[in-house]
Length: 81
Image (cartoon, rainbow, N blue to C red):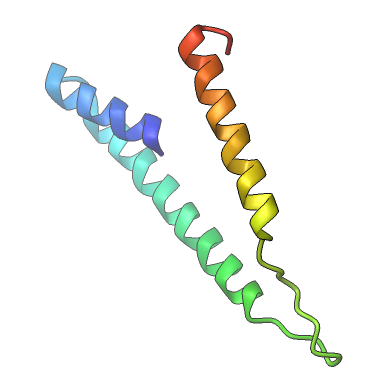
């Protein structure tokens, strides 16, 4: 969606075909909303034994994700990715 938003801004600025890009952006936003709603619904599912379908990430996993994101950003900045 970020790329579509940027393309829409560029198309509006250059007088290009902004309508087609706006339609694609709207479809992407609708799909994102549908998926988000499904995930939120799945978070509430509980089984008979009180276990859950969704388990939130542990603090260690969140730290590892942040480290991977930082390293990926560093690689991108250095031109490696």
